[in-house]
Length: 170
Image (cartoon, rainbow, N blue to C red; front, side, top):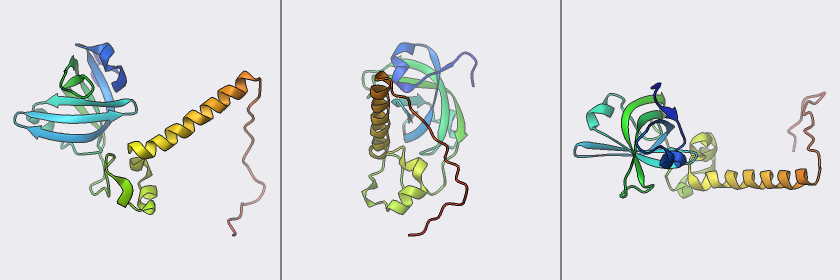
């Protein structure tokens, strides 16, 4: 990781225009058009298009769902979905995705079996619709907790140790 760059979330890129930053996330789309490679990087806060010359990223053999750190310079770009792009200076592959994934994070999951979704749960959670279920649950829990805390309730987290093995009989 470059020492001059600061790790930030994608949603905060407007605060770092013309500055060098490090973004960590996964590749959700890639395309090469002429002399430019476009890598769409996604993290928990949003997505941004990263731009580089094809020869600068070729050695990394990037593919969809790879988890990467991209160091680059932020610039305004009116044509970009977010209004900003990142000019790639460095790429560090943090974790390669599997060779034959049954779906991608942006896939329509209607035709994917529940068993496959469970087997590939970390990948499924990257999908916006599935991830939203958990974000709603988290928001509800946070709001309940805040409501009860304001009324001086005490949250008690009890031990889950059992003196004997639990049974799964039906």
